[in-house]
Image (tube, rainbow, N blue to C red; front, side, top):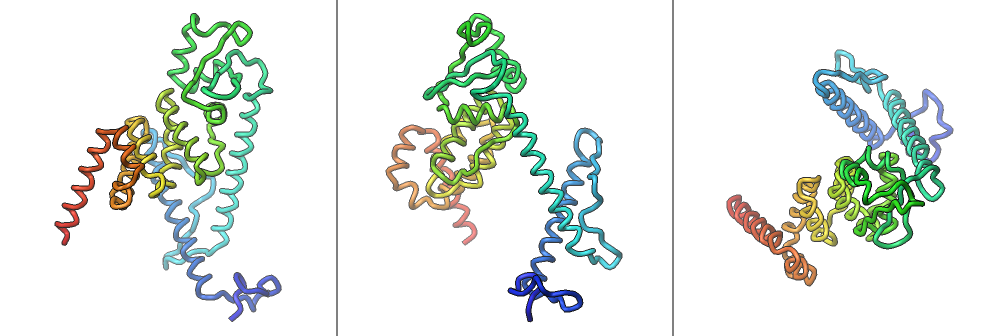
Length: 291
């Protein structure tokens, strides 16, 4: 049977000859069910938020069901996907608009941030103070931060490289993290640095974003590095990330614990190495109990 979705000649088929193969049919059902469940979850979350303030989506329920439990089909799903795409494009446009306020061509800057390496970046005190309580207290000290760049108004952030400071400022101005990929070593390094900076300068939203992205990429190759930075930030957003990294270390204990990387890791983090040992013993006890 030629499928009107995945078949090579689908474009020329017209009703009533359109047919759909079993895999495409099951896939369509799964998409409808998944998006319907997501829509229900979102409505429940919105209904319980902000002490009784109920948010109602502009569109109705994603999938309208009749008494027999059937759905209208894929049309509303496609409309919902288009809505989501439109929302994404709108968010990107908003971020690009807000990003015009910082960078080398920014106007009326009144402070310069100097990274540990690379050229300094001009910024605005008002934005920094509004986004970070730590920056607000730093900038209130008139003895350290003068009237503006021409008067020597400069704050040094030695823990950040130039590219990392650019990403931090981009997030403070736009609320978005302009980091395309975390799969490379550079992307992972930037995320770790930003997570530490978010914890140090009290930017909890950035901490959550970095934690979520790092958690997705945790694997055997970077589990120890991720565990170390998650333990460093502690209550600033590293709790779930630390659990995820520790689980990977325990799962691949035979490879991780006997590696040279772990020797250096244990030398730098003696307390954390004890936690790893306890986690391994606990996992062994649980495996024995199940057996």
